Length: 114
Figure 1 (cartoon, one colour):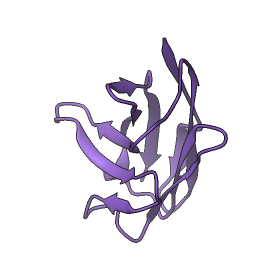
Figure 2 (cartoon, helix red, strand yellow):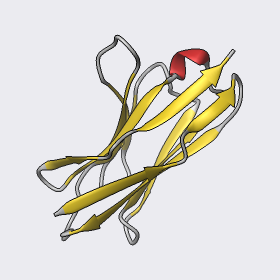
Figure 3 (cartoon, helix red, strand yellow):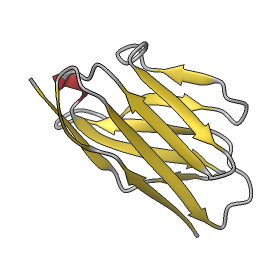
């Protein structure tokens, strides 16, 4: 079994920052891609950022330049540093890892007030 535990969500004012963390534990032998999706009320889940084993990154256009994804392979942890947050960033954020198969975190709420 693989478990993903997320932390770092919360309420922040527009322009503020938050850092999300997602630690994987359990039957982990090797992890490929890691990343974050988000889902806002009434909207489909969308990819926010992804990072490969070698550190290559990919971002949604709406967060590029504001969010930074990173990973610590020794700790099996992926991070999402979110700066200059906007109300439209409000969503539940889900981390994932590709082991394979794909495993998901439980989600953490991020709320940005205007």
